[in-house]
Length: 317
Image (spheres, rainbow, N blue to C red):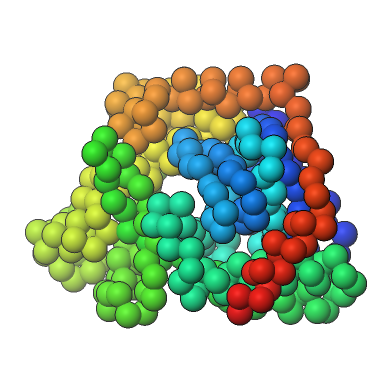
């Protein structure tokens, strides 16, 4: 299964920025790059793994490295700013950048005018300006560091909220330093589960490591993260199973074992719980999008008007 897209970075700063109007961009992944899109005009639909969202003016969405995603729009007036960053290039400046998950859910809270979102849009617009004006490697790389500093400090902490269908939606925590003093412990546990999901891990084992009783830890995880420990483990295993279904030709039985499930039936039950479809149907939905005729389709757009829209973001801050 080959749909890994190689990004042609023209600068040694390993950042690429462009304005575009996309009608159809089939499923693809970037193995080591973070892709951020910001809607300048119209509406755009994004499918990130199994989650689908409609973005409108001012919305920002981040596709994490290794995450299969698709971008479509039936709106002929849609224009987006796309910024891509090679995380492998910047990992020497930021701890654990390889495993960092970036979150921006403006489409769910519609808080498009908070200071952190306005500053993020400003930084994305500035990235395009630097990239298109002179492409200075030194200037662009310095801006890349500043952008990643913003992202790692303000767009990595999250909790889960379950909707009426029991689907788990990620919600970004704003001002995380002031939200919960125990978040470091929470994300240490999340990180441990992410690193050891394929093994036989238990609540009691983690409680012992954290010097807590299992009952106390269970309550703490549910109250802080929004999921129980068993839900967290199930979702983590399913996310990794989804990645294997997307990126490899492994059988479902093999994937079930590699993801830490007892068998393919156990995987199927849990996977449908979180993704709304069976593992086989999930893989088929991606394969259907990789047929030869599923080519990238861009639309022409008014470049001068897009610059006017971009300048609004530059003037916001």
